[in-house]
Length: 265
Image (cartoon, rainbow, N blue to C red; front, top):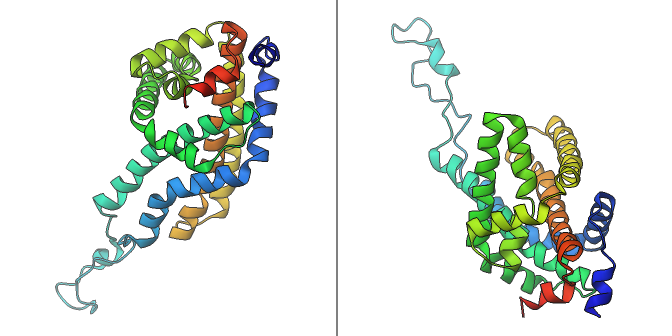
């Protein structure tokens, strides 16, 4: 059974990864979206319930222009959002996508095995692997950003090298630094293919986000709706990484899907 499943993936293919990823997301858009919404609930609740004191005037000067203390510029001033209003959503936007990614990686592997992905099990894996996933994601992002600051090309290369570091952290659990090294090993010789996959996803997300941003205002409702492309393409990126990780291991090491899923038993 395992050997037969391995034989289906003899090489790493851009088209295969993208088509199967879109197919898996399409067939599971409802449960995957529900999982994402559950995970993002703290962020949505904060945006809805936390008071927004920006945009309120802070003027205290008399309204009489003939008063000697009158200062017309004070009426143009507005209060800046509080530090909490800025930092809490930022922190949640950093942490929560990694929970979704961990949950979806497990769900995708179950799908590749031909089994339904239980939402409870997916969320258990996502939260259970949160800290190593977070460490890998942040470190990979920082290294890629530093490479991009130095020169664009090194940043792109690092991003391609570390593309499957999070799936490695979820499935193999070797540690943060070891996950990055393992990802670099798996993507060796396939960086152009990985780059093409990432480029397709980035272009699609940026175009979609631009359309949403042009149609929305700065209200709380607009901020919530603007999260839709982030959530959808976050899911698609996680699905692609999981499918790519499976295909790389199958093509390079002959590892079957049964072996990958067995680690969660």
